[in-house]
Picture 1 (cartoon, rainbow, N blue to C red):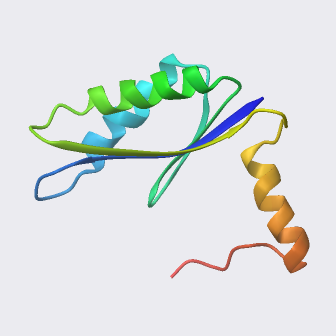
Picture 2: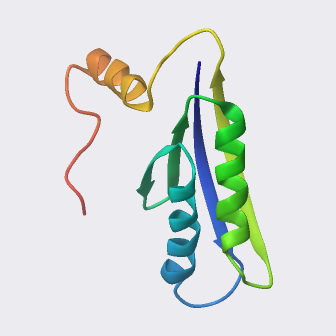
Amino acid sequence: MTAIGELNVVPVREGSMSGTIAKAVDALERFDVAYETTPMGTILEAEDVHELFAAAEAAHRAVDDDRVITTLKLDDKRTVDQRARDKVTAVEDCLGRDARRGGR
C-alpha cells in the first residue's frame, strides 16, 4: 500500500511566506514520510495513509499565523505499491523524454 499526497499549507497574510512554510516542512521530519517541496506545494509519500494524515496535520499546526489554509490531495493506492517517482516515470515513458523543461 502506498499513500501519495500533495500538501499546501498557506498562511493568510501579506509578505513573504517562506519562513512560515519552512516551519510546516520542518514538522514533517517527525513522521515516517518521504517528501519533496516544490514551488507550488509539497509532495508526501507514506506506506500508511494514517501517517500521511498525521504529518499533514502537524505541518498545519506548525504555522502559527492567525489564519491558515491547508489543502491535501491524496492518492491512496490500496492494492498497488507505487511510488510518486514511478508515476512520473510512466508519463515520461509515454512522452519518450523527461517531463520537464529548463526553468525560466
